[in-house]
Length: 298
Image 1 (tube, rainbow, N blue to C red):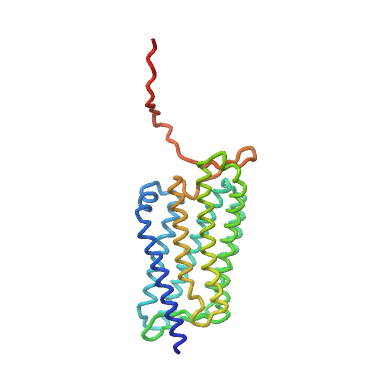
Image 2 (cartoon, rainbow, N blue to C red; image 1 turned 90 degrees about the horizontal axis):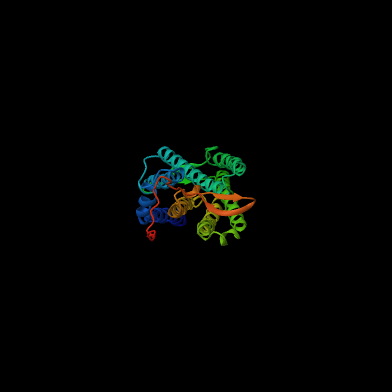
């Protein structure tokens, strides 16, 4: 291995280390909010998806750190480690896309027609991504003496891996377009309902931030598969995966701060006019107590 390849390998290790540092730092910073808004509340579907996304990413990336920084014993063990790592990537992206899908489903008043279309598109893209990731064994994981396991991809396999990340990008683009369209349609009703307007602002702002950041990260990641060398192909996959898990956790947590239903808070439509009214829970058994003192009858 020449000096250039060693530098590229070091860049890969540093990128993984930075990505995991961001993931763990964000987890530590938001842990009090997680306890308050997730663990101390009923475990609805939104909360369960939050926990699966956060801790799957946590466990998977800690496992990845062991692969990166602990020496393996053979190429065969490296191949098994890298396959397990790719499985973690795949499951994590499935969880992220499922969370985004349920957010759009609720945002459109729990439209089953829209959900059906999203499921069909999602399954088609998932099939393409899984075929690209697991459909061929032309990649080789090698053990570099004195270093770590590193996944080297043939040009053909790199293209297939790139297609998997392109599928993720296309689905996130679809989610972003649907979010922007919904925000535009409900813009006038925000003036009629300021409180729900604030929630819609959170959804739109968080969705825009998520897509913008992930575009800036995922596009270079995709380009490494098509323009990179054997060593650099896929070097940003871990960074992309960590940032996706971090941002989606922030998004769900922000919604749980505003409403108990989290990502499943729905928009109600009435007489073809979209009203930004979100579902809430009301305890009708609780007595109503007024502090007003009425004057005694004379």
